[in-house]
Length: 258
Ligand SMILES: [Zn+2]
Image 1 (cartoon, protein in one colour):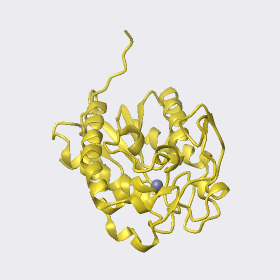
Image 2 (cartoon, helix red, strand yellow; image 1 turned 90 degrees about the vertical axis):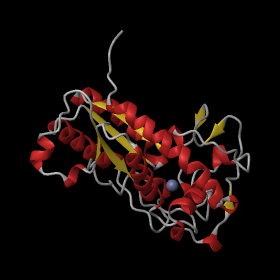
Image 3 (cartoon, protein in one colour; image 1 turned 120 degrees about the vertical axis):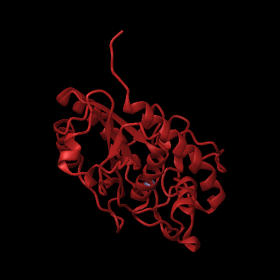
């Protein structure tokens, strides 16, 4: 089954039976600085590769199709670093809303926003709800490292809160999926100056509006020197398996009141 909806003709799309099951996935990446050691298309490559691997594992009867990658998104937290290309929140929301209208016009009832860039998360949550209200589509957002439990213990206890960008996780994953994008001799370790129980960048009771250049000079958040191919490979299988399971469930998910 060809899951790339853009490779079908209009009549083939029209012939899809989407009255019950079926979902269209919009993969979202970003192009932004990823420290001195990772290529700027890191999140884009993750979004593409993880999805590609999950789609290959889906049972043939599961009705999931995908759109081509949306390569640039809201990554203005890296403003000031070369290599960063960003859409504003309002532009990104407007574009995805238009794509949602097209999904509906094509007969889909479910839209999946598959995203590998942390800076998009808050916006996509707002957007998923707005699209639900404005179009009636069931809208899901999936974030790679957020939705997929990490089977490995972090090597540095600061990593879960502060190793959020180009650190051990992303560097190990890149070694596993596209090693040419890792500049091995440039890997560094950098954590922000403050460590707090109650105030962190994400995931705690109080958060701060930040940009990378507020705290970091190399662009790395976390310990990229601790990354390894083995750690990347150990995560890749469970991550893809989990994504496959999530997509399979979404394909036939129904919203119903009790
Ligand atoms: Zn990233």
